[in-house]
Image 1 (tube, rainbow, N blue to C red):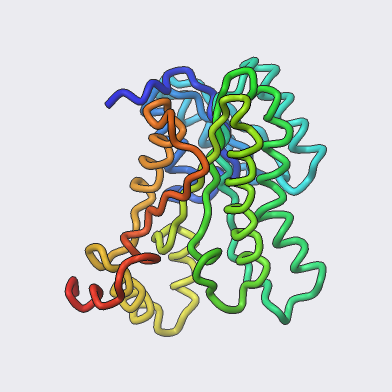
Image 2 (cartoon, rainbow, N blue to C red):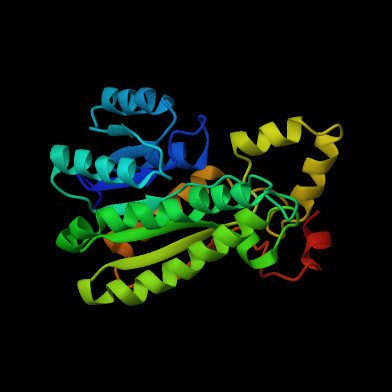
Length: 265
């Protein structure tokens, strides 16, 4: 299926994570579809990602940005418009489960909110005039933690709950402009960051096996490619009448009966 993304300017925040991360995978899927990915992230590895995409014959841009800083986000959007003159979609992909729990300081809690939800607000705020012109759309990458809790991560849980609230609020606010707003909710996906965490545990392999067994569909984690493919479909005009929705790409983790777990393992 042609998603009609050729030459679409798709801004992806938090997309300069390690190779194999959700954001980096989304970038490459955009390029595969002929879209133009714009990387907005503070990590300098974004320069390498943009260069690698350009070598495939697809244009790309990296704007090094602290997404918690309003001035830097505003400047990033200005640079995007200077080069391309438009924005067709924004994918908010920032997410760090930083463990800011009830024992965290006020400052730590607020920093978690700034990174994990305020950054979403900032990017959409400054991109909005151009989304109105293109009748573009917004996709927020969310987490099951907003719905299930996790323990020990008040900041991240509150932020991801806020992400879902903003998704619906923006769907209502922006319907008059023909702008869609949706969210993908992820449960367990074996990203490089997840692997790094597993490697810190003395019994990491056992923990990983237990987590895999908790996922009803096929007893495995969601692949980053599966998340990216769903993301591209949602931001494409093949999903033109979908707005205000939470799309679960989680192997049934959140909704399906736990009794299924024993049936698939």
